[in-house]
Image 1: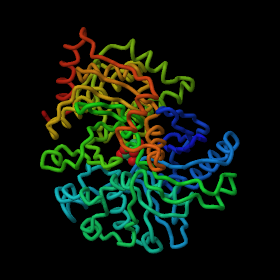
Image 2 (image 1 turned 30 degrees about the vertical axis):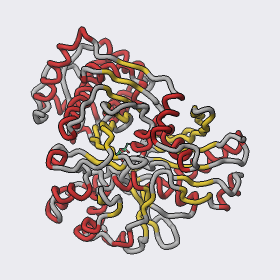
Image 3 (image 1 turned 90 degrees about the vertical axis):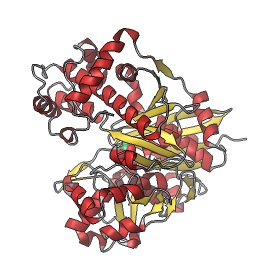
Image 4 (image 1 turned 180 degrees about the horizontal axis):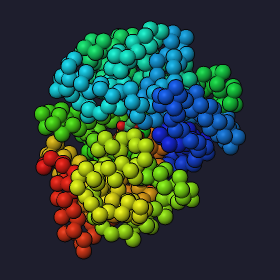
Length: 500
Ligand code: LFR
């Protein structure tokens, strides 16, 4: 029988890639055939995504596929970050360039939530962590500042859904990405009437909901012809939310695990069978993000590698050749626990100069005498603080679910940083297992294969992940156990984190 190939497009905030995958003898083979920068851009002083350029990269990716493998392809699926969306007109035209979630238009929207419906009520319905980036906040800013933008809109689609629409001509909102909006009823897995009514969002924007593994349709014949693909290629939605595609590929067994999907954002979570929405999860501001194949991702966003990416950007202004291996090497040599930062402080959300932001943070928290001109020192502060924040969030998750956690799976691009992996094990005091690094691409491809009938269950899917990858293990270092335990206490105190 001919090999069935799938093509995944995985879009991150920095870069995107096209990956071909096929399953043979219970193993997934993956090959990256196209890579491109994504990155938002300032247009008229607002931060936007050039979605048609993303589409162009998809066309390029499909052409690369055809050049290598010919016209036969089983399916295509796209995943992206969450929360960002575009409005479509009746004829399917995108009405404006979608905003990127770090745009400042959401400033002040949090108060609106409290006034209109109350945070508790919104959380009880949606189960989603309050963050200014959420679609809810972005939509509130439309109601508040630019209500005419609703006029010609007949559909609201998330970025990945827009790309699926361009490929298939079919409009639908995939559940995992839609859940990040904070506009769904977490139990009904559909749009919340109450949210739409209370905030004055038009009903016409409640796009039909579909689920990871659903076949949206076949490729638009004109697109197929343009790139040289057969007309029967299926468009199968993976978990359009990258975090949910990644979570599907956690190689976990048993029940006592937590995970981090590590990239620009680090999503720290545990998997549950149903939403966990109660007073404690509300107080701790934990999300119930939609998972694939019936799962619920009880997780919290941590600012993640964004912080070191922004430091690197600042350093690269004067040292263009400085790369991550060298940054890590310098961090290894730097003094441990010189200072702490709270990665999720507002200062680090969209900094102009991240080193200056760290300086401001240290000053505000009375941490003096730290030489921030030393790259290793700064990098070490960031990596240690991230690891300590992971520990804090895992402790919160344990408290809110009552779950026992004895191992942490780290998946995604962040796993390539062995120092951070070791720090994470040290901070947590238990075993960290890393991989797959291409977790999102893996999950995307395997969810497509599930949609095409090649895989029957999540367990089978994870068996394939385990058969197809090598994993690294990091155990907490005995000799520094005491220092890390002390550092955790200091971190919480210095950063003003509530005791758990
Ligand atoms: C990670 C991610 C997170 C989401 C953030 C913004 O790429 O999808 O899960 O909270 O991006 O959308």
